[in-house]
Amino acid sequence: MFHPLVFDNIRVVLEGAVYDRDFEGAILITGRSDVMDMATFQRLFQIEFKPADAVDRDPAVLAQIQLRTQLADIASEQLEQSLTDHIGCTICIHFHLPLTDCGKIPDEAKAITEMLNDIWGHRPYITHTVRARMEEKRFEWPPQRIENQVTLDFHRKIDEGNIDDLRGLIDHTVQSLLTLQAYVEKQSK
Image 1 (cartoon, rainbow, N blue to C red):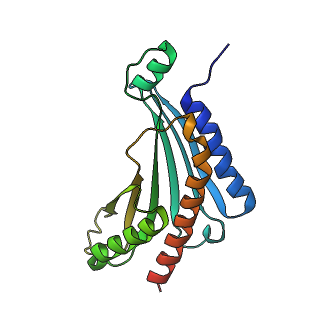
Image 2 (cartoon, rainbow, N blue to C red; image 1 turned 180 degrees about the vertical axis):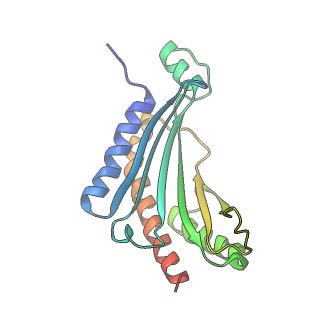
């Protein structure tokens, strides 16, 4: 009989918790994928959503939760041999939001980090990846629109013992999403 991996068990609970929030009307799921990378034998589950009341608005903040597992974790579990320190998978959360003023990027990144640290209690490690798109033959600086990908990384593996924590993780993610949406709307005025 097929025995699901730790990844599969966590994915099912995580996905269900996100869909519960969608059914409640707090968010709207805009994308999901479940990928098996055959070159590196990794699994990735990704689900994306926006605030339900901001889906048609521009700008709208996008949240993306990624669950990953690697070859060593999968092999350890299937072979029932310890090939890694701790069998499990990792969760990473990304928020994609526009920035409007190129000159204020450091100040806005600091403000966003402070907001997220208030919500998450300084637990995840927060990074910002700022991007600007420049169209062919329209090289203008500063660009009219800049995207900031804010990443929350917990730097640890989780397993089935952490399943009860997933609902809290989703609650914090939705709260962060709504807070960032309010911040973006305030900045764009």
